[in-house]
Structure formats: structure tokens, C-alpha cells
Length: 224
Image (cartoon, rainbow, N blue to C red; front, side, top):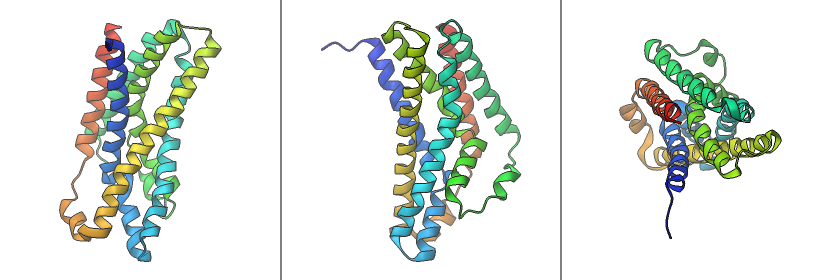
């Protein structure tokens, strides 16, 4: 069975969706230490697992909030290339901004950590977690559009909305799986000393990865 270049591209794009979710989940800034804290305070592993639910929902809603507008825009077939290029430049600019300005948004400090869903949603937006996913999503839409032969605008909107929801769900599932596993290991075996000793600042890596994702997407967009 021969595998075409388009099939390989599609597979790599979905792998990028999952990999970015795992990356977000491992990052302490996305909230897994709060799940550990809930488990330790209530002395219950069930509390830890329960805390993962709001974190996942908040992250998923943040992904949808950012991706859904692009799902409507890519239905404008004649403007897809400019949209992809603009989205790539937006991701690069946000990454550069995060490299220059390391301060955390003050609004996040006003959200109590007990409101896990709202906190997860806000931190994903503020750190550009959803924005990182946009170029990958647009690449998947390009593959999907090639298969449908650019049907009517309404059909394209339906396809892209479905893709937006699917990408968000897959990404959020990978994110909470990685974060949940790490939270469980810390709670069950490694303890708080591991958190204090292994805690490292991922802000620079996070911002640099935004620039990298945007640059790669821009290169593909210019070639399209």
C-alpha cells in the first residue's frame, strides 16, 4: 500500500496537535501542580482526579475560542493563503512579545486557584497556548479542503468547524493526559520536594516555541 505525501503531511500535522498537547500538559504553568495541591489538601487521589476535569474543560474552551474564528475565515477560499500567512505572523509576534515582556498578566492573579476551569481558560489564553495551535489547524484545513475539492462555502464551514472541534478535543485530551500523569506521579511517589527541586521556568522555551511554530507555518504558507 503506497502512502502519498499528502497522507504523510496529514499524519505529521495530527502528531503536532498531540505533541503540542503533551507539551502544554507537562508545563507546570498549565495547572497540574494545582491538581497535586487539591489531592494533598484533601488527602485523596479522587480530589486530584476531580481537579483535572475543570483544568481540561478550561483549556478546551480556550482552544475553541481562538480556533473557531479561523474556522469561519478559512471558508473564504480565495483568501486562505493570506489568512495562513497572517496567522503565522501573529504567532511569531506574540512569541517575540513574550520573550521581551516576561511579566505575567495581572488579571491572572485575581482568579482564585480554586476556580480551576476559569483559571485554566485564562492562563491558556494569556500564554498563547491556543494561538500555538492555529497554524497546525490551518494546515489540517488545507489538507481537508484539497480532499473536498473546495465545495460550497457552507460545506467548507461545516468541515472546518468540525475540524476545529476535533483538533481542540485531541489537543486538550493529550494535554490533560500528560499533566494528569505528572500530577499523579508527584502526588503518589515523588512528593513536593520533587516539585520544588525540579521546578524550572519554561517561559523562555514557551515563547521560543511560539516563534518556531509561527516561522515554520509561515514558510509553508509562502510556498503554498
